[in-house]
Structures are given as structure tokens and as C-alpha cells.
Length: 109
Length: 112
Image 1 (cartoon, rainbow over the protein chains, first blue to last red):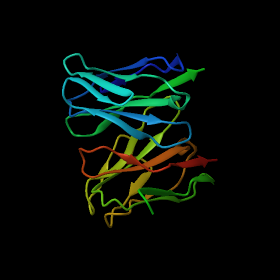
Image 2 (tube, rainbow over the protein chains, first blue to last red):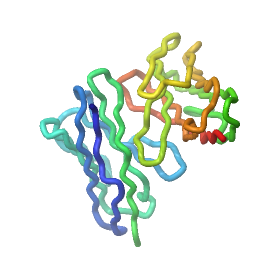
Image 3 (tube, rainbow over the protein chains, first blue to last red):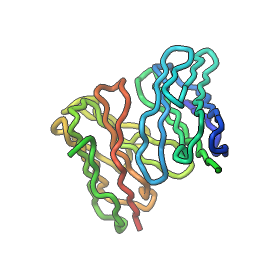
């Protein structure tokens, strides 16, 4: 079967750095997405990786290793507004998105 | 309308009733999707449409139907609601089937 694994919950301190990991086993690979979802709101797009390496976008970076079936989302200079769930999703060989259950990130002052 | 709009935002429904969740987008996106989100689970695809006039079944299609008569609208119908269909439903769209998804604000449905 297809599977996306992420930690259920993480806690970090305001101003610090946090890394959220995602491992996947899917039938084929056509890109990996990270989305942010605040409680009670819709998911919003953060990043997309299709080639190995690091994609940087402001305070957020996303890394992909296709050979290891692994990605991480790195959040720097954490702010209270970064408290949210972070969803990892992989496009399989049929271009369907397979979603992880999400990682709830709690930021403490 | 700006982006993707869902209605209703929230609904309580008696089991056995018929319900249609509406979804409209004004971005001229070709692909549209319906997901349900339940606590502790990832988003699960119910139905999708890669272009107007076509639809396909996702991971959890049973008990749901969709239509795509035009580019903008993609309604989801529960023919006879059951309590296990209590969930938050998200409609999403993408320019094409390989692009990033844009989500509506969600419809919280409770079936009693």
C-alpha cells in the first residue's frame, strides 16, 4: 500500500528552528508538496519538490531525497503564527496526491 | 467571488437525508477535487474531475456522487447521509492535474 509518515505533534520555541520530517512509500513519484493548515481553516500551499535537494522560500525550506523516500520542511525564526498543522503529500505514478495525516506544530513563547 | 467558494460552511443533517455541497471556482482551473478530512487521518480523495464533463472516483467514493457540467462548478451529493459521513469536506482546484491545489474554506457536516 501507499503510505506517508509524519510525526503527529512537535513543540518548538519562538525564534528557534524546527524540522518536520516526512517519509513516503508510494507507487511512483511525481513530486512532493508541503501545505500549512491553521486550525479550522483550509490548507494553503507552502512548497513543491520534484528533484533532489533544497528549495528555499523565505523562512521556509523544503528538502527532498527521492532515493530515501524522504523530505523535510525547515522553519526558521519561528513566530507564533507558525502554530499550525503541516501536511506532506506525494503525487504517485497516476498523479493522485497521497496525503500524510499532518504534523501539529505548537510554538511556545 | 475570488478563488474557490464552498457552501454551506456548516450543516447538521438527519441520517437518510439527501445533501448537496456546492463548490465554485473563478480561476478557470481545469481540475477539481473533493476531499474529506477526519481527525488523525490525512485528506482522503472522494471524487475528482480533470476537466469539465469528466469525473473519476477517488479513495473513498461510496455514498457520494459528483457532476462537472461546466468548468466552474463541482457539486458533491450525499444521496442518503449516514453518521460515518460526518466530516469536514474540502473542495480544491488546480490549473491542471499536476499542479498545486487551491482549497476552499471547507464545509463541516454533521450527520445525526
